[in-house]
Amino acid sequence: MALIDVKVPQLSESVAEATLLQWKKKPGEAVAQDEILIEIETDKVVLEVPAPHAGVLSTIVKDDGATVVADEVIATIDTEAKAGAAAAAPAAAAAAAPAPAAAAPAAAAPAPASAAPAAAGVAMPAAAKILAEQGIEPGGVAGSGRAGRVTKGDALAAVAAKTSAPAAAAAAASTPFNTPQALPQVDAQVDLSAYAERPEQRVPMSRLRARIAQRLVQSQSENAILTTFNEVNMKPVMDLRNAHKDRFEKEHGVKLGFMSFFVKAAVHALRKYPVLNASVDGNDIIYHGYFDIGIAVGSPRGLVVPILRNVDQLSFADIERQIAEFGTKARDGKLAIEDLTGGTFSISNGGVFGSMLSTPIINPPQAAILGVHATRDRPVVENGQIVIRPINYLAMSYDHRIIDGREAVLGLVAMKEALEDPARLLLNL
Image 1 (cartoon, helix red, strand yellow):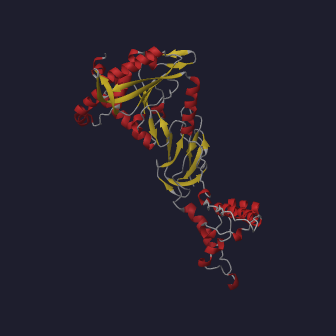
Image 2 (cartoon, one colour; image 1 turned 90 degrees about the vertical axis):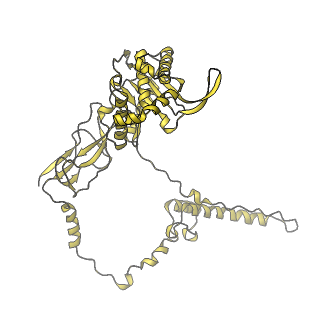
């Protein structure tokens, strides 16, 4: 027998431990080299653990949900065993065990048809507790559960019937025979079965969700967050996109969306007002001479913010291509730690879900974030006339500790002007 350890891969310096999600193989099953055995979730990404060698999964040292650290052994692979050998041994032992002696005819098991009513008069735990407190025998309660079991709703109905009967008898006894009878009080039958089962499920937060919660609370408690708003007429961008989207896709192999315009407009404003692209480190302000823009992306495991590096050097096609790749990676859980590290400014697009307006929360240690929303036709005034235009409300949250209202408002206005006149992005105006 040659055993090889399966170990937790190296984690990033900022990640101390991780959580095992779900084993894809069971002991005794064959595995191929580089076949994915399990996924490990950190507070940033989900890592895949491949089999280091072909063979049979011999033992699982750490079960689903276990907390692990880098280089920890979580399973072993037997490179010389054959698939099914581990599972065959218990089965062979069970087959070799002597059969139990035949029971006397009188003790024979009842036929399956007679097993169903055996549960009649049997109370479920919650129902049994209620009936015991009220001194009611379960056998006297009609059960509506499976196989006639008494449910909590049945128990509550029995208690209600028990308490109402003495009250009705006492009322009848106290009424004189020589006085007019009052109108009978008819109690409406209350169906309590709807309250019999009120399901709840308690599940632990995933590491990613716990990390998101921690960072959002950190942002709210450490930053002096203020939000400024503005509205943008998206017609010029929409006209430009509609005029060139077919040729753009044919030329670059990717669709021309709106996010590339928002990203370019953001960089345009960050150049004019560098403090929007800064970050806070203790009592220091760090001004970044590059533009790494985080794009908030929803994934099955929670919100992630992959980073577009050196956006000022990227074309519209490069931006659209990378955003599409990040979306695919987020959906498939393939984002690497490097994809999520860093960032000098972020953009959150709630408009894809239909959001009209929001106040985005800053992603620390960044100092500002842009919130983009759904574009809708709205009445606006142009040259004294009311016209209909596709309007998008922009919201920029900023850290008031280092960014004054002037820079924040002017920065958002610069984004607005760039979107309403896209030529500014080419001419750097």
